[in-house]
Length: 434
Image (cartoon, rainbow, N blue to C red; front, side, top):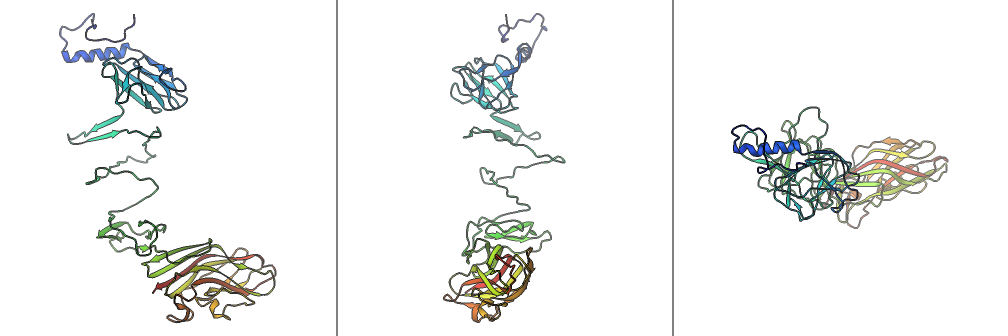
């Protein structure tokens, strides 16, 4: 005859001390049960899952070693008040544990399973003749040094029936991670993404975009200038005053400025990226060129001017101050040519070796000498005032005036200079919207 459970009524020891405290009786019974009841070490969960054919568990300790597919299943014995069953999932997939027919687990409806992740162990305790309770839906940790507060970890439903894994990266030394105080907020939610925000003290809730801004207000930390603002890498802390933040370096001095991103002008060319900074009135435009086609070469030993649009100022009156070419690299096949390259309000064309013969070919930036080669040749121009002079000519551009900015090049080309003349680098325009 097998022994299934020892109770107070059927426990008859052969030798017992004269007196056993009443509170120790249950402890003795539990210890005897743990030693008498068996352990099953190589259990296979039923493939395909479900309650009907689930592998029935009959031991105190149950080691499920074969779980081939998620939701392969096992089934608990009939619930008997006080009965305990341990289930360890050492299989390859998540295991479903069903109650016996007509029984239930935790607050679930009858005959519904709970999932035990790979490498997890769950203790099931029958609180009456039909209901099992687990020890893993909520973990409560009390403070070791005071009676105040507890740390509660609780699982919640997952629509995709997936696991949420919290683990640590490899660490060179011990670490302490503190959950921040949410203040008056009842809770806070971790946000997705790869943001790394180092040294941030406080953000104001009143950050607003300047006039003409595109997109949602945001702060970008570091030298990367995606988003509405570009902030230099020097800032390590913040202080707040009303609606916006002031930034300081490690020694308490004001760090490099925040540059609001405001998009006013445009480019019709996909190989030119426009980034504009300012307050909607005083503006700096950065044009980044990547293999931008300046124009097609004729493949003849002759002078030729070519050009292409890189930018268009917005409608209305604007005031151009200074412009520059930053490390512009011109590339063309064949023999190197010393070009005359500048910015104009009219596209360069015709039999010309320099831009100066037609004022509008370089009225925004006087031509600079840039050598071409198969590998490219670079030139850098300092900021230069508009050719016609500040406040006159092209510098003061009204609504009806030409708004297009052309990158123009002229030179005496060789017969082996065929295909397109291309440019890579940066053009900077400083201007004001009137």
